[in-house]
Image 1 (cartoon, rainbow, N blue to C red):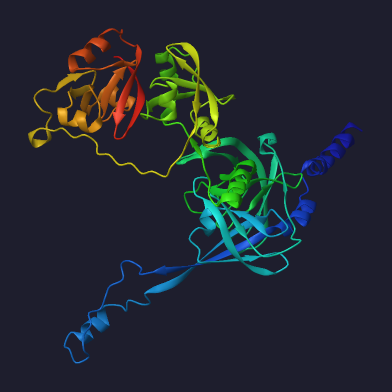
Image 2: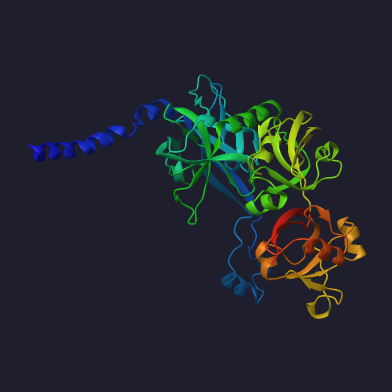
Length: 463
């Protein structure tokens, strides 16, 4: 009897497991028509690397040689086509997609699931978040419903609909792998990471929760092959909607800035600054005359809260500041010398700026350090010349000619200029030795280092 009961329970297991899996059919039926296929055409002019045939007469002895052995340059321009996805957010034809899908397009065609095709125009795009708003002329179009990305949970089922490799209205599903992901060069988006299969052509398509609400825009994949490898990233829909609203109203996006360069607070830096645990955003430099400078924020401060919101890591601060409207007043809580302080500042406006700077070079004959260099703590050090100090606008510091051992392991590089030790300015080589000599072996100090146009703190354990 017991054997029969056990056999019966084993037969029920596949049924019970299947009953727990979600059914996406209703979601796809209702939301599928809101997803569009986007195809773009771009004219590429004067391609590089095309060999040019000299202008020769047919009776010229070299004419036959060039005709045979040098290929024809072909047309001076050609058409390049690409595919992407998008979704309708209003019945009159506004569509959200990725900026990289449409930003270089000369012509944009939007195809609906009912096979209707429309020409679209770009209302505006934002490269920093990779969000674009486009418009087609339509009415009573099917629209998506928006969800709250803040309520998403890691492990929750999500669905992507798009046109991978041109296969229109393809549906893939998976779970939320992580939230608030930061990617290199993407400081303004707390990405939703999923294991939903996303491939080229899915870009700009919606990410749905099981309620059929859009929670994100599929934007990027992490891949070594160019295809899906289990790591895909979506822009939270609340971030995208804020960008779309600005693009629709003004055609551009404005972001706040306060004029600081920040870096993460590692365990070692937290120890050197006397913080109870790693957290916040460490200010490595402050732009002169910036909102932060006017508010009294200094290099070495750790920003803990901005405008009433916690700064749990350095990744949080650019998002919070960028989302603040220029001209708004914001309260900042920071830690300085183990003491919490509150300051207030008026947020400025971020400009598109490009800065270049040359790394200071100071080498003797044959690439060797000049005679006044000394070796300390695994570093070959010298004092910057008056010309270098003037160029970099610094009053002191020591120049790293070479870094080995503990210094190299800490991340110190040739060309760095050490400006301070635990926020005490370094004036000369001798002064640097005095400051470092105050600490015992094994102690971690925070070295403020100037590298190119920027400054950063490097934790250094004295050996």
